[in-house]
Image 1: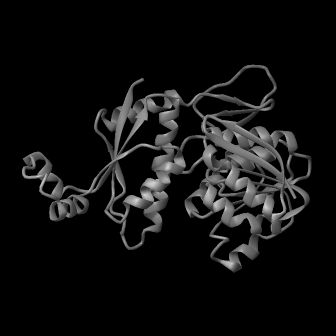
Image 2: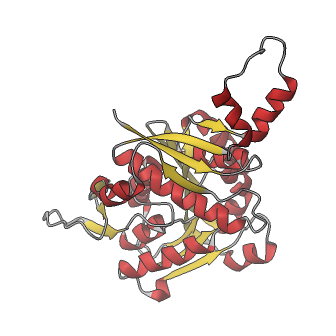
Image 3: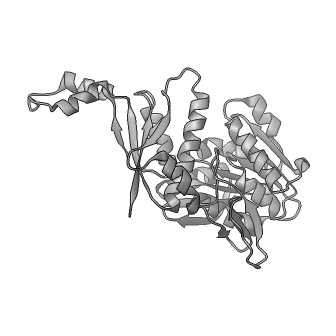
Length: 321
């Protein structure tokens, strides 16, 4: 397999949060160059190090950089879109410039070449029995009566390429009923709530912590001819802003949340408060190693597990209240 080397420029303070968010995207291996770390090594090195090459000494003045390797295929293209979206969100929230410039470059390929070629990795994708996800530049004329959901890779998470999104949509199509009211928490591109409406739900509320995601979700709903009266977007943090949490509180028939394990666990009580009796919640964004932990946390809150879908290291779980 061929790989592309991607460098992400941050600061010493930014290393932990950027690496954590990279792991949430599914990137589990990276290398780090950090001047502060190297200076600490120089100050505390033991007697086994009596000579250090001049090339290594350059690390004492380097800009902090996290390097990841992306496969040159559909998965790598989707990861790049998610990395760009993650860095944009982080930069927008970094009002004091703690995390540096949060920009990227490629060391094994010109970025312009990638920009010109990445579209070839995004093709129409059949999901479940009913949906087809496609970017706007691709034609689809197979006469199989699938519902077409059009999403372009842009500045928010959710293109239909990632396993977590597919797992959620596969579960959604089996439990949607006409007239359902949906809450899409951590909506990203809006793909789950838009998919729910196309599958027959009556209306949807899409929420993200980032304003850009809420704007993008609304734009994507409009591209898919969803009436404004049926689709409402909000941005804010329900865990830290009680007024905002109360604003979107309602009795929902279905909740979807494709986030990460820690945030899902933190939100479990709020989800229970917002879900109707016998309502369904579908959660994903969970690495397989943490699936049991998340399931236990939700069961302790009063949810009953209905199904667990696992694919290539990622889990989606459906519960009923």
